Length: 475
Image (cartoon, rainbow, N blue to C red; front, side, top):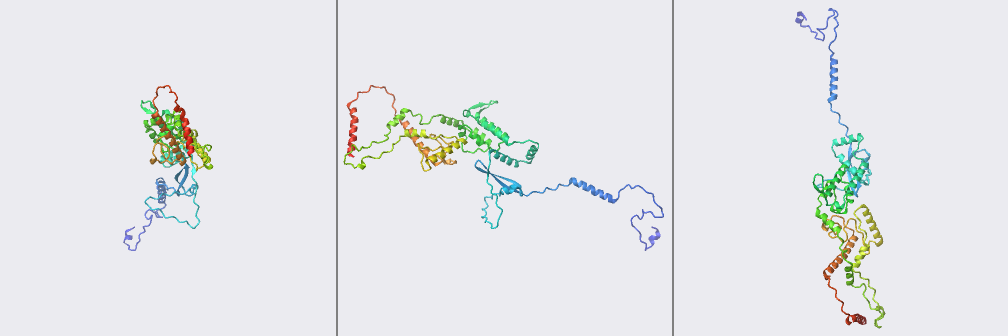
């Protein structure tokens, strides 16, 4: 722009693009130069592409879409008890319609909700699935599944990876074999090993039954039996003295508790039970001579009644003969009948329980519920209970280890309780009679020649006969 143009007030400068750089037509064509820089549009496009490329690596992934989960309550039957399991499943799955929904229990401080009135409209029928009975293996599998669900995420990933690789922690067949090993080890414990001592490799003295309990725990941990499902089966195959030492009727929840109870058994209790089992019943020491003495001192079975042949002729004929009296049995005779008719006492096993049920059904079919038990029709004793001559048993359940006021076991049948009281009365009388005879029995004295028989001895039966005739004449 020239000086004259700047002085002209009407001049308007042209500041458009390429004003200075654009050559005029008079300058002629300019020489072509290679383009070394990209245009603004290409730079903008490259920057956007780079931003999108870097954003893909740093952007957080979108959270997965959550499923609609509901909690259901599964019910199973195991050992005559109902077992429940609460799991979460999708709301549209088949299990959500098969099992009832789980509702949390209300707090104890909150008042119970009012009763829900039945709606008049038709509603979807509530699932009423009966509890399914579980076997021991199914119960162990259920407990293992609950343990896995409550385990950490690392353990669940490890289990999943192990299954994917073809391995398995424990199949049903392996569990059955492990259970057989556990039962075979349980049968190795003998009655003579209980209370006996042994020395291990380190020189420590331990009881054999405690060492056996620790071995059982190690085998159970290898199964693994974390819930103690095999403990009831193991207790049934143990010797009778071990079953009594573990207090039948109590619950042992785990194998650690099993070892603790086994180690807590005292030696004096073992000696007491062995001494009680080895001694004979109280009525067996009674000799034949003592039984003969009891029978000799007992009253006659039937009292003589006057005969109509020697009665006066003026006596009315309807009173000529008295009704026959029932023979009165002596305690020794009742004890003999009791020993001959008593039913076999069954052990506390599955086979013993089945035999006991058969005995009860047979007794009820023969005598009925209205008939009372006695020495001629003894009532069966329930398995695992105390013997008839045992002392110190609970009068409510006939088991050892507690008294009647502290008994939590179900009571024995009423007919069995009546039979036990009858047998106890017979037993007490026999023992008391034997003890009295032992105290009154004189010492052995030298044998002297028998004095000659006098006329008084000869005439005594005649005198007795005269007295009998006079008594009859007075009647």
